[in-house]
Image (cartoon, rainbow, N blue to C red; front, top):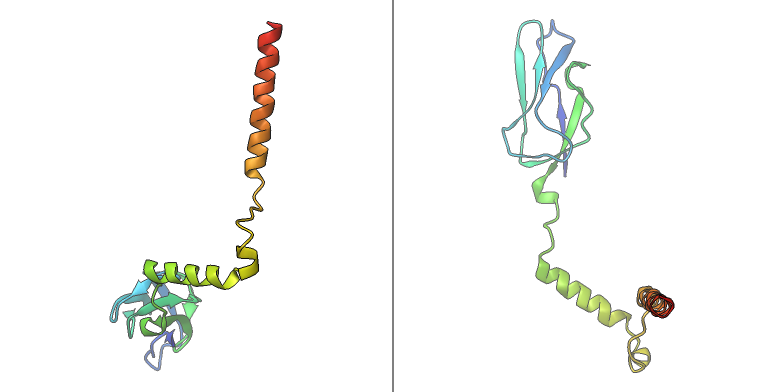
Length: 140
């Protein structure tokens, strides 16, 4: 779930503020109440904090920008909505299952088939070098 981070409400007499400093970047993981950026008016500096744990995305502001109250500045993806990374054991199981699904039983009985020609190229180069060495030895 994305949480919109906006410029806080300012006193009625203040219609514009400036972004003083930004402490996060796209993809930064933040904790609840961590300072995201500072907004400066002619009278005060406000710290805008993360309302929840999450990952910062879609930063729409930069230092020095003039902003209005309730203007969207960035989004925070709630950590609970981010998928957990796959463990190495799960990766092995997925790879094993994909391998078994892609093998046709009739083809499996024919033995391994290689589509990689690197071995053939290496062998041909080695043969040419060996033949050149023999010719050089004989002519010397």
